[in-house]
Length: 69
Image 1 (cartoon, rainbow, N blue to C red):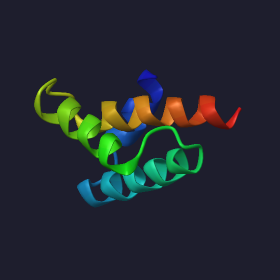
Image 2 (cartoon, rainbow, N blue to C red):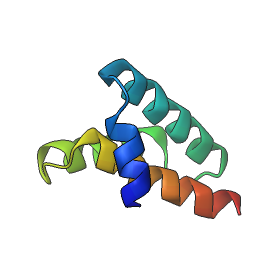
Image 3 (cartoon, rainbow, N blue to C red):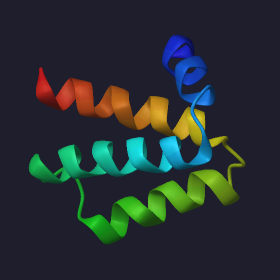
Image 4 (cartoon, helix red, strand yellow):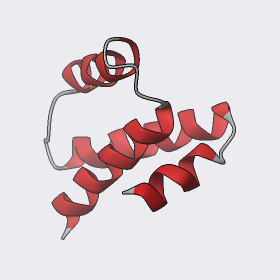
């Protein structure tokens, strides 16, 4: 998890936004959560929990990885 977070922290803001969209698109394929709920979760983690985008990406990527395997 720390490795992914570090890798995502090296991306530009635009790069992070693109990666977030990629992950969310893959999660939609598995019917993990609907788009609106996923966006609410992301916004909550960023604003209420004060997570950096790199941490959000790392966690969502791990969920995505678990769903694919």
